[in-house]
Image (tube, rainbow, N blue to C red; front, side):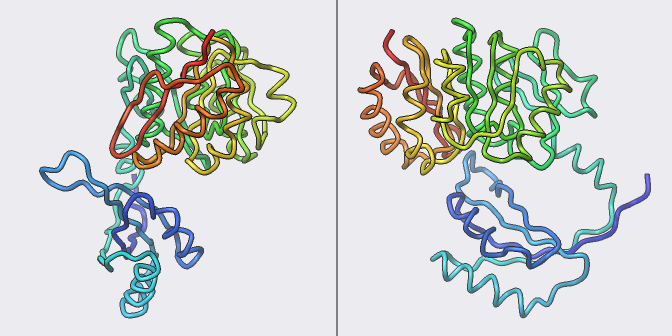
Length: 303
């Protein structure tokens, strides 16, 4: 296979909770902007991430040192900046190596290049994230997969809602684990299109329906409820806004799984959902799953 073009990069070390702000500040100033976790030798969990700006020609180092220094000042962080040259290589093979299969409980998420590596007895999902969020690699998604696996081992839900579905990973996982009727909703039409492609790819079209919806009080979501299992892997702020709507969608005896939360945001979310849950039959925290600074919460509604 021929080698792809070479690239150049400039990178800024950023705490994980400031990555979205840093990416937004960079906007469309380069060929591509991405981010990844910084793995430190001898440290199991690192709170730092690296925002990477890619170029197809050598960037002006003086200009970009100044630009990233301004962003670091605005974010209140040290200006840890580095420049790099990425030589031409087989990027398809390199990307496949980075996107190794994911094991989460009984679930095995894989790309087409790993189709011959499916472990016997696993619940396998062939996944292409496309332009949507959600490959199972993020700590919050991984926590949700573990929660779904645990809950479905005890009792598979008759109805499940995946609010903010991204690429449909969690909806498909629930269906694979025995959920009979699954609704996958997202505010982004692109995410819904990717989800539908993944549903077809995995032969789950008869059990999962995907639609574009921005709020849990959408009449279409309410008409299909209540749900034995509701999962929302978003972020703390929208989860707070959706507290009343999501709480009322959970069936008596059902469970609500929330993720996309930093550890320090857990108390806020628990307080908010306990308060709103009082008007929806009562919600209590049954379990928390911490992973790499992110928390997944499992709430139970009294039956």
